[in-house]
Image (cartoon, rainbow, N blue to C red; front, side):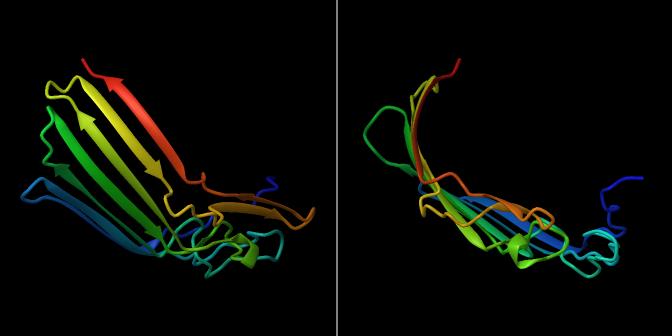
Length: 171
């Protein structure tokens, strides 16, 4: 007999997703995506121990809404090769890290914004990329776990705002 609660008996319901991309005129590229997911446990007995059920609670780590979008622009500069500017945004609705859906198990809605500036040589051999991650410096938790018996709670946060430089050679 396992000490872990049994797996839930029902899968997610009503998922919807959409995505697309477009290369428009003048060196502009656009990408977008989004989704809606309504996923609940119809029945999840003993999820938190004997007699503690999660029936009707949201599926863990499943935001109801998520959206993403980005774009690139090929800068018309008088240099050999290609200079490209890009940015993207990802947003997710809040969700739970536990089937018990307790306040301490929530992950709040949050957005992440990233950007790049790159140069690729005319022969495609050399690439230089300057990039940034988490430009908004979001410090909302991205996951957590809580053990009531010990009162121990672990919380994970995203990487702070980060800037990177990459140089690569391609054969």
